[in-house]
Amino acid sequence: MLGRAGSCQDNTTPAASAPLVWNAMWLYNVAVRSGKFELFRRWMVHNVPAGRRILLLIIGFSFGALMEGISGFGTPVAICSALLIGLGFEPLDAIVMTLIFNTTPVAFGALGVPITTLHGVTNLPTLALSAMVGRQLPIFSLLLPFYALVVYAGVRSLRTCWPAALVAGLSFALTQFAVSNFVGPELPDVLASLVSLLCVILFVQIWQPRDTAEYMAAFANASSSASGEGGTGQPTTERPTLGETLLAWLPWLLVSAVVIIWTFAGVAKIGQINVPWPNLHNAIYLTLYKKPYAAIYSFQPLGTGTAILLAMLLTAAVMIAAGARPVILWQALTDTWRQLRYAILTVMFIVGLAYLFNYSGISYTIGLAISSLGVVFPFFSVFLGWIACFLSGSDTSSNALFGNLQVVAAQQLKLSPILMAATNSSGAVMSKMISPQNLTTGASTIGLTGKEGLVVRRTFWHSIILACALGLIVMAQQYLVPGIIPQ
Image: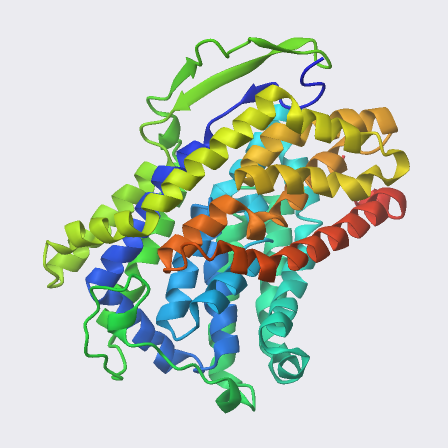
């Protein structure tokens, strides 16, 4: 009776994240090696208050959500923690805060792939699923800046910085809600992060916390940026010109534009080859669905990782045209290998473990046990997604694994299938901060390899607290305000 619940087809999304993360980090290292990260740092120095709390909101929350919306799969943790270190944060603080922030955008990450995957395994309407997730996560998007600032600097610091937290959270939450409910799952993160980023930067031009000096950032030298190499060596405090500002923001604006165009043009599916995996495809029978379990490897030579590779090459071409040496491309590649070689190996083992759990029936047994909880199932449905995302590091994989289980359990218990399926995706985001895949990618990027345990000790209880809060919200949505559930 193996596999009494689960998706009827597995996929290779976690494995496909490797080139995506690799190319995103290569892009970052090109910016560092060309010296344009120093321009970015100088732009921050002159255009936002040099306070750690404001920088956390801009880089950790708003900019991190943009990276999640574009690429997902651990990229925000690697890039944003590296950026924060370059702006003077301690490495452990940088990765912990980035992980905490990398929650509410995750369900719409990688241009909505988790939601479209959830639609694929449940056959529920994509817009209804998007809308339901968009009626859960914006609550956390609004509150997360406040929560994170308390975690980082204590309640007392929030008394003076709450207006900036409100601007960041409210602008993001409203945009995320509107786009997810009325447009679809592809752009909530990208548009919400851009709106939030713009609102916070404009707001701090006219308002600053009165105790900024107490939380002043000690900006790191350009030569000690996160990659540890390739900086200019002689930092300057001159205000960047308009041209320098464009070069500072070019990598991130360019990758945003390329990935958005790539996705809506459907380039990723060009040349796609679906390969039934030998001796595994349809070899396991799912008794609940009365059909065999497919195991198909989807090879996409023009997937999203290729789009980021193109953005990296275009960025390098512009940097070289602006005076950088062509050798920066090779140097950045070498930096990326040093940062990610162990992370790639770890991800391979984690993905293998996830597939073993999946095809052996272990994951489904856990899921089936939780689905038998009856009236309190809406609360614990959060932890189905939480478990799956912890194992794989991917909201997409969580939805592929347990999305259909949520629907079947909802039908058996006379609950809303749309609410339960959406809750699987929303619940998954709460364990991103403790997933070994994300931890390893981020830690290896900023030189904390072997210290992942320290990070987990500082993030684990935040993951549990947020998951429990979501469980209470889901219970209320199911039993107290069922009218909020889209049909």
